[in-house]
Amino acid sequence: MAKVMYLCLCFWLAAELPGLTATPEGLRVRQHPPHLSVMRGETATLSCHFKVESLTYGVQWFKMKSGKRFIPKSSRQILLEKNQTSSLVITKVTLEDSGWYYCEVNVLQKDPEWGNGTELIVLAAPSAPKIFLQTPSNPQTGRWALLCLTGGFHPSTLTLIWTYQSTGDVQLSVTNCTLPAGNQHLNLSDAPTASALLSSDWLVNSTNQCLQVMDNHTQAVYLFSGFYLPLKQSLDTQIIFTCGVQDHPAMTTALTTSFTWDATPNELIMHLNIAKMCFLSAVTVVFLLQAVKHFYTQRK
Image (cartoon, rainbow, N blue to C red; front, side, top):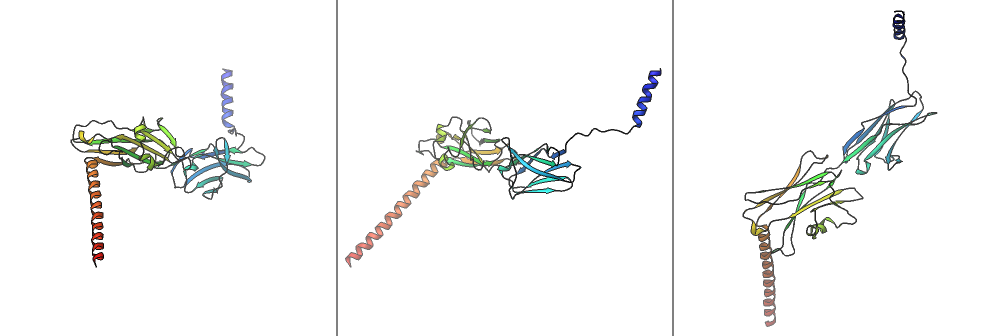
């Protein structure tokens, strides 16, 4: 019983004593938010809060890349300090601004302390998809191909999907792409230009029918997808093909464009032949008029 009374007395005395809080050594630096996503061209604001007792201190922001520190010195990057709060403001952000940023606080006779870091994620929306009709070397007997192109997006996660609509009983196999998914990848320094790619036999030689191209300078990514169209002789009705871009963090709605596969190739060839005949006829008429004029001039 005496021991119980002694323990109660100890607890009562402990409750009456002022509370003691263990204060960790060093500075307390906190950054927020831990991750910040902004669209390319917008303004990004990274904040850092710290608590120091000394009136003399210094704050420095830096970016970590490949284990090395880089001090922001661009005129687009502004440092703001107020009430033990520092902000790094980056205007008109570019893809190169992506990365981890740290706030460092320095006080005399103390080791500097970093914040927990803020990852800046710069998003770039993909361009609206464009559809190109690839003409074979022999339009009469060759296979026509349909290609879709989108580009300029960041990060490189993207889905490009084909759909088709037909009133007839048509079953087709079209190619869908999701990046990154181990698709064929080329750098622009090693790959042909877009116009050359569209006019080449890439689809003939391609096994996966999807090609990703990245510009190492701008970090812009381009994605091609294509497939062969059914032979015109096998069609009883038109088919509407739609190429869509979706599943990208910089997008709020899907982007689509459509193409109708009908009598266009045959009509196109017919119109070209008609235009060719008209041109030849016009040249012939002009030549005959010049000949008649020359004839009458000689007789005079």
